[in-house]
Structure formats: C-alpha cells, structure tokens
Length: 257
Figure 1 (cartoon, rainbow, N blue to C red):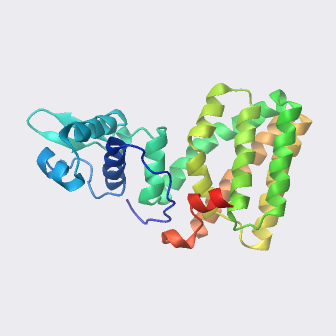
Figure 2 (figure 1 turned 120 degrees about the vertical axis):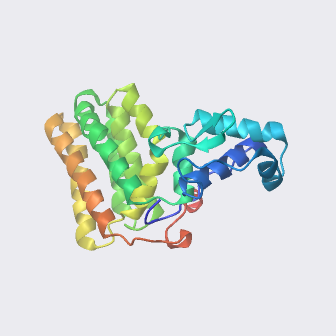
C-alpha cells in the first residue's frame, strides 16, 4: 500500500477462525504479505495464532473465497494479486479501513461512485416516493445542523447518499450502496469541508440533488451528483497524506454519538 491516509477501526471478529482470517486479511491488505508471497507453514501459523489446525484451515478457506489467497499443491498458500480481491465483500472493505486506506483506494471508490450514483440520482427523480423525499430532507437538515468535521455530518451525508440509492428503486444500486457504506463513511470523514466556503459548497450541491429529485428533474439530479463526487475527490487531494487513528473520529466514536 502507498501513502496510508487514515485508519478507521471497524467491527471485531466473532469466532476464532473469523479472528484469524481478519488478522491475516489485514496483513495482506496492508502489504505485510505482498502479492505472490507464500504464507508461513501451518505449524508456524498455528503457533502464531494459538489455534487448532481445523481453525486455521477454515480461516484460509474464508480468505480463498474472498479472493485474497490461493492454495496450490506442493507450493502452499499464496497471496493473490490485488485485482482478484472481492472488493464488494463486506469483510474485505472493512479490513481496508483497518489496514489504512490510501489515495488509490479513495480514487477507486470515487470511480465506482461515478459509475453508479449519478444514474441512481436520475432514477430517483422518476421513482422517488414521499417517504424517500422525507428521508432526503431529514438528512439534508441534519447536515446543516452538524459541525462539518463531526461524525454526525459524515453520517448525515452517508444517509443522504444511501437514501438516493434507495429512492432509485433499483435493487442492485441499493445493494451497492449498503455494501460500500463503511467505505463511503470513511471517505466522508476524510473529506470533511472544514473551511466555511467548502461547507457552503457541499451543502449547496447536496441540496441541488434533493431539489432536483423532488422536482423530477433527472438530468439536474445526475449532474449535481457528479459535481458532489468530484468535489469530494478534490478535498481528498488536499487532505493530509498520513493521519494516525486518533486524528479522525473512529467508527466506534460514531456509534457513541
């Protein structure tokens, strides 16, 4: 990984094999086990984690299923290339946040957002219900009330984007929105509009999304969404290159707020 930006702790594993899979997965994503690297043998890994052979094997099977590892006879367990990783797997995304996300991750996230969210906004303009509009307006109001660099602001921003995906009426778009929620939240925390002018711009263009959806104006809703995503990318470029876990609110802090 290059230029680590921010670590946002996510959820804890709930079983021995999940805990081992999480530990190895984070090590792979953080680059401690590089692409093409063979993992230590079973005996060494068992001693390292203090687990049984069946637990270790179940952990490896989990990572193979997620695209991070491959097992080969007479070769062992080898780390797969990054392009093979299942980035729509909730655990793989969470492990990226634990390992530390970099600009490559943020750019990839922005690209998939540009491929999906403008179309979702356009569809929402045609498909939205009164309940959808109420949720969009609630999220917008919450953004106005929260401090720009707070967890609450990022959560309200996230709620608005998820509401747009829901209002689109497209089940695939809804699913993508839910899968990448944690990554979006991390992105929003990092790109917080701390300068008054940036905050005004962010609120203005998010309001344009909501107003266009309410007015049934698909083209404007889509264009406003594109602007919002590009504006977020610009703020990422201006963010500090390295931030320790304590320098930004964690996911756990958000749960307490």
